[in-house]
Length: 152
View (cartoon, rainbow, N blue to C red):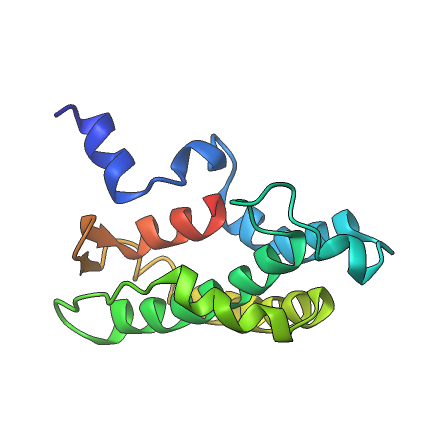
């Protein structure tokens, strides 16, 4: 396996980040999402583009859930030695999205992202090489987690 393929396994979202600075992307994402949904009505945001695809509402709620998971992972990477990250079943989490609105998802994501950015600013650059293990992706560093968050 090439080094490039190995890195792709550890961070399947890297291709979306391209050459953008992860911290810049992390900081700008909440505002960009707010711009994208603009004044779109909730009914439109709940429509699935196809039977197996999530609606915009589902995606926003998923981002809020994922940001919560990243909050924990970032802190465990900094404060715990040789930590094993616990994956989660995103489809099981999605069962609750029917009870949420798009705006609730975006507001929650934005608040947790803001909290995570404060933590990241205080941890970088010392934390960048700190390692954790993901059971499906292998060894990852704080830097890899930041890149994964930004690409996601």
